Amino acid sequence: MRGPGGGQDSRRLRSVEELRGPGPLRFLFQLFVRGYVLRLHELQVTRQRHSHLGLGTGIEKLDMGEKWNKNVIPLFQVSHFGYYPQVQNKVKYGPMWTTPFGSQAHVNLASASLLEQVMRQEGKYPIRDHMEQWKEHRDYKGFSYGIFVTQGQQWYHLRQALNKRLLKPAEAALYTDAFNEVIDDFVTRLDQVRAESASGDQVPDIAHLLYNFALEAICYILFEKRIGCLEPSIPEDTATFIRSVGLMFQNSLYVTFLPKWTRPLLPFWNQYLNGWDNIFSFGKKLIDQKVKEVETQLQAAGPEGVQVSGYLHFLLTNELLSPEEAIGTFPELLLAGVDTTSNTLTWALYHLSKNPEIQEALYKEVVGVVPYGTVPKHKDLALIPLLKAVIKETLRLYPVVPTNARIIMEKETELEGFLFPKNTQFVLCHYVVSRDPSVFPEPDSFQPHRWLRKKETENSRIQHPFGSVPFGYGVRSCLGRRIAELEMQLLLSRLIQQYEVVLAPEMGEVKSVARVVLVPSKKVSLHFLKRQC
Ligand code: HEM
Image (tube, rainbow, N blue to C red):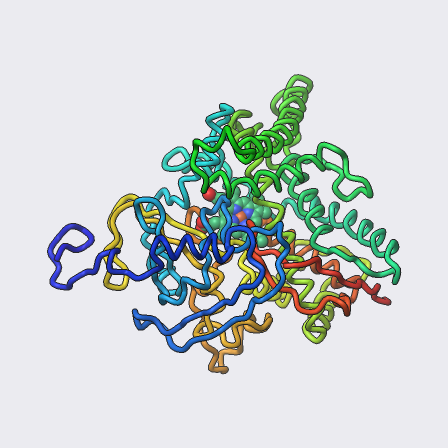
């Protein structure tokens, strides 16, 4: 039998055709008849841990039954990370199963050890997804490919440039003051919203407020430009940008699944392009302003006199990025930097409000390091381990990217006795993996303490390194991880320092739905009770 390198191997490696999974008809039935594309109102999550591969034990049911907002595109969404297969039903085939897609099946992986085996085999230029629809827009408009779209050597060079001033924690720390400035304004806005409520302390939709915060913060970091998201009334071009992001993502789904000949006949393709056009013109305006600013500084003071501060400014003045490359990539950075952090913060606050004893422990830790009235600095955060643990636990329960992917182009891949051909797309089921009870006991409960280093004498279990990898893995992992962590830690510590966060009694249980990222199924309403210092 041929081994992965093409040599002879005495073991019989099974082929992808021998791997189980729903056939095309069942898959279409799941998508369209059971309503996973648009109309899903009630869903049962069945997590089968007893597999035909013998990689787990037991069967578990996780009830996600709920009334879903019909505008929400659940659990199967086209995004920059590829497809979101409907994870739960497929898990019935075990931790590895196929789903039909075009001429080649996708291979779904739903255990930490399978993720590890595939991720550790990736080459120098990992591919997440070919991003065909995103490419089509860039080609149509003549924009250069951004960091999500570009592949191979071109991606590598772009990524090398973008890594500077972002990837290392010490570099991200340079943005602490900028984040704290936006956080000051967030707290002011939060107080205005509280004051407008009947009780004087309620925020009826915290995710919305945090979305505006995250957009304001990422714009300030990338462009050194404040765009008014935390003003009582949001400027029109900022509001258009926000609407356009929604438009582009909603129409992506149709654009992917409907045949190309339907494009002139149906509204989706044009709406999709319009969404992108507005996103790019918003980014281009900010980039043009920055290019002009750098030119003016150069003319006035020469190269020595340029004051480098923000990220784009740094990349342009060091000629690491041309303005054209910036126009291709910065709108993608804006998209990546908003829903991710804002939803994680929403989930963290929701769980802290439901677990007052954990919140109280965090409050004590925070004020022990950053007393009321002081602003946390980067160095303070290392002294608040529970803060990091709260964020890690939140991302374990709600990995922002519930399903990621890798396409292994260079070679055949051997996995658990199967040999997969070159160009196989592996779907990494992070949501299922990070709730695996064999890695995380009581996987559905919020227990930040599981992340704290136990005393060496304690016989603590070692967690699997791929049990929860919310920022991905390897050279193609999240570019914004360090600034995201900094931003979330700075905001969360300030909120916990100043307020006791209480769940509005009418809220009940909040479930997660996967749009582009995992979002709450309904508005999360919280009371922020001012702490007496
Ligand atoms: C809670 C916050 C965030 C989470 C959980 C998150 C998660 C992820 C994940 C899972 C990936 C895919 C990694 C892989 O394929 O291995 C990714 C990629 C990426 N993220 Fe984030 N992200 C977050 C925030 C941000 C922020 C604030 C930025 C802002 C710049 C950002 C920029 C990117 C970029 C540019 C990529 C693509 C990198 C590439 O293809 O080379 N992310 N992120």
